[in-house]
Length: 376
Image (tube, rainbow, N blue to C red):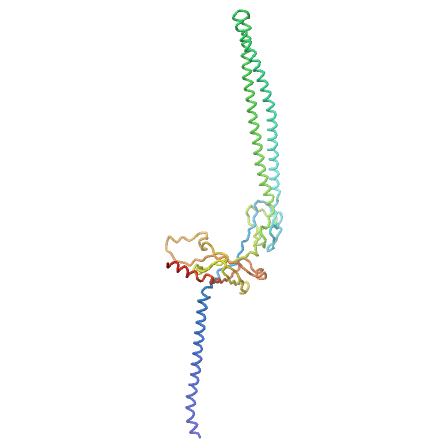
């Protein structure tokens, strides 16, 4: 019995490794098949979907916030809102002491009254002047009649004095009187002309008073605008931020006092590389992940693409025509609208970091069409 047992032991030891090697071989083959299937599936998915998904984390939530600044200088009388307070459009925010602006308005009103009084005085003087002109014309007519009479007397007495019927002394007196009468006519004519020119001068005074009145009314309108500008109101609905104004502070025109952030009109600016834009079009769907929401996905859509790269709109755009050149991939801002639920929107504020993925499959055939057109 012992010899038979020793003879069977080597056969069993040889069969065990064969069964183990066969099982490992099958497992390895199965793994290779699975890996191949997964690889093929990944490749097909990438060709059909993955390569059309353009992603970037260079994106932030933004809003077209409005800066509140006064149009007039003065001391702040009231601050009617607090930091982070929600406001409605037209709601009063700050009141500046309006007494200076009201004084300017009152001064303009006084100037309007003075200009009107000056014009009325000139008009009354014109009425009086027409009467003076009529009087001067009557005096001129009388002077002409008198001059004509003495001219006739001179003509009548001259032949009589020549014949001796009248004395030459009488003729000489009549000639002197006739010359004086003619001079009086010329003086009366000059007086009539002077009185008529006086009307033109008075009419100029009326026009001057009217112009001064118009200038004063323009000053009153500007002063009234300044009076209204002493109360600053919210131009849009939103939330107050960056408030720096306090009661009693003297503010200059144009000084930034606070900002109104329209939280109901948020959007995303995503800076995509230029190599990602070939198939990007307005209206394409976007998947948004906000860091502050712990990866909760939000939907959006591409609104528009900027008309230039971010570098072109910088304070000092790059000038590559001089010196050495190193090619750097540029980025183009893309504006994306947000379609978030009210609950999620309450947690969004400008400046938050986000990651966006744009599905460009709707334009997948555009490059092919461009190549076909280029080959024709």
